[in-house]
Amino acid sequence: MGRRRRIRQHVNPLSLRHMDTGARRVALPLGALAEAELGCAEGEFLFARARAAPGRFLVGVEIRQQLVERINRQAAAQGSAVMAVYANLNMDLDRLFAPSSLAVCHVNFPDPCFKRSQHKRRFLTPELASSICRVLRLGGLLSVQTDIWDLALEALEILESGGELVNELGPWSFARENIFAARTRRERRCMERGKKIWRLRFSRPVPATI
Image (cartoon, rainbow, N blue to C red; front, top):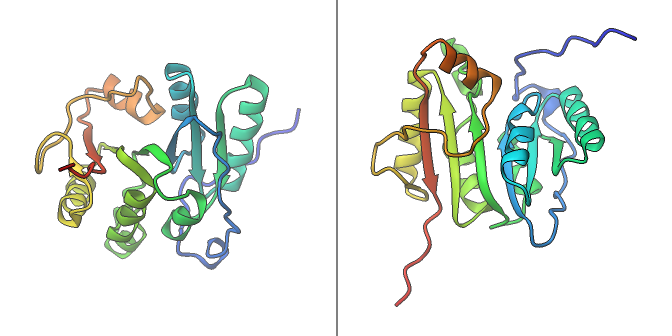
């Protein structure tokens, strides 16, 4: 058996090679509640979520094409309601999903890009938050998890200041628990080591009826 090629852990989404991914609209199954993990890595969370929530369709969006191919092979072999797509979320989210088409968007432990010169690469931006709001259905959820306090605080500020999504736990508050019955490898390691995890849950508000 040939050795697996090493896949880079960190990718610069602003590099020219990822500026034109050819991303196209994802054909979601009719009648199925769909969830997307934005930056799904190896897909561990996706497969766990699919097992925990039968009847839901899970889409992983990932900028490392080798991981996308690996997830799709695994999903086909298991007959799992999971698929992955290669895309650059800095520009492709509105191309991938129709407006109001997703029940949940998951952002799990994004790259912190610690160096100040790399902060522009950080995952959650005001523009991406607006795109997430557009693709979420009314009442749909955005879940964000990170073990990096600065990143959690930055995400909280972006989401609270945007005004398009509502904090499910109250203004400027974090959630205590993961409610999705699925965990990433990073989350499990943090829990084993007793490391704090910062969780956010924001929803797209349903307009009040008169």
